[in-house]
Length: 421
Length: 213
Image (cartoon, rainbow over the protein chains, first blue to last red):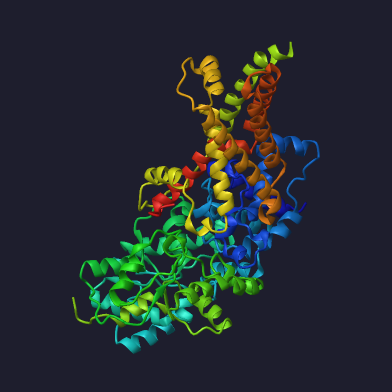
């Protein structure tokens, strides 16, 4: 047994709290969670049943915390957790789980299975059992500041384009601004239109905002790979930057897990509450609209639907703002049958998109979204997560589907009535 | 001789083991600890917990189609078992005499028979599903089967003892019920109590986020 594996087991042991103990005590192996997981529904492979994915955690709990487990272990009837368990389950907990949380919504005994998978990753990452793509992304995030290797120089180049195209000045390191905005690397590299959109909207609404040169990256690879220290370091950088600048709010961008990381896990990772509040860009836009600081004009008559990013909606609680906003610019907004907190994942969350070996499975799982779109017959899908957007576009391309994926923030910027403040 | 043992010391031992065991398990879960959540709540953890404890009795639409058999069988078994346990005349009499000191109205004989049939059908369907469905077959362990078989035997002997014409059948039923009580705290049967905790923990977490779970 290697020292690193022992450290991984110790890390896993540390995750067993009252929640997990109650979950493992309650599970009756009904398997109903399988029907909520797109990796199971699209493959019919029982191994992808969500509760099966936490088997190593259950084994550890059972052999160390239950009467029969302890007895069986002492009699040699049950093997303790081995490296082989970790090796076998690595694919199940990283490749076939996007931490979307849908299984947690259907469990009859109320088990938050996603919470357990998030926690089991803590042990696996310490033991070294994590996909190379995610390990590298985490390393880049810690060393460079971005999982995609985006530097301040890259951001400044993107901002220069935005300033040239909009004629607006983008504030950097402006002390005491009301809002400090974060971006995901994907927005900076693939979707700079998002930056342009918020620059226009904030300017129209007269929002006092800034970008920190010290911490502009919103994503948190530590959360995805399940490494508490890395996750805390990445959150800490944002917190330090925001508190140094003295901002009132940090704006989480159109990125799912970034919101979970900074809004819900962040304070617990650094061990204290923030001196500022965290607001999701959709919450802020909805607020600006309600306050009359932005006015939207010219409703779009293209039939549209909404893809709910799991971490923003189901796991984040931002359920109504995207609907309020989309309804204000779309005349024909139709929901998919399963939507809101029960929407189906794009298939690439929870670090799966950074995990190259998971690509064939991810594309297979996309069949669920394909089915949803075909059922609805709508060719424009609005979303609010850069990662979802990339994954959806790849899935649509793979299936040769003629569906356009649109950012909600960008759509709103297109309908912005200028000079309305 | 053996009858007196089953009716006397073994009953007191089993009920004591059951109560102490259940309390011990629940205390052990709570003692595992939970760190305070430092994020600013959007909604109420308390109302989220209460909502989840009750809302999970109704399955989500997404699983009602493919898991229909399991859901219907689950309701048949659980509701049937609860009615039999607390509203069958012999049980009301037994509990009143041995535990509460007072009784309450029992269901008529024909309701008992219909309920027992529902409960048996539900339990058998659930067990067949467990062994035949690839997902539940993969998940199931010895504890799941022992629990199912014990409940089945307790119910079966209970029905056989219903006529109350053979004292030995009543003692056999009581003996199996006592084995069941002793086994209960060490097994997945604990879900009958811990489901409130698991639903509550999840509901509280989601409630803080403003999500109805």
